[in-house]
Amino acid sequence: MGNQLHTFMYYGQLCAINYTNIAFYMKNQVLGFLIYGSKYNTTIGKHRHHV
Image 1 (cartoon, rainbow, N blue to C red):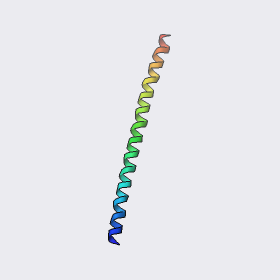
Image 2 (cartoon, rainbow, N blue to C red):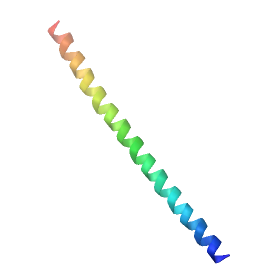
Image 3 (tube, one colour):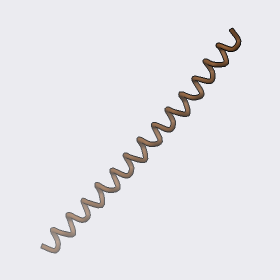
């Protein structure tokens, strides 16, 4: 029983680590997209200003 609990806790930790990594990755993707989007928007804004 103790071994089963240990295995369960081990898999629980793995899942927690995976979810943390996924959340971190998604946050980075969103941040990267926002940064890229703002750069893209300012580029469009500059072009509009020239016209």
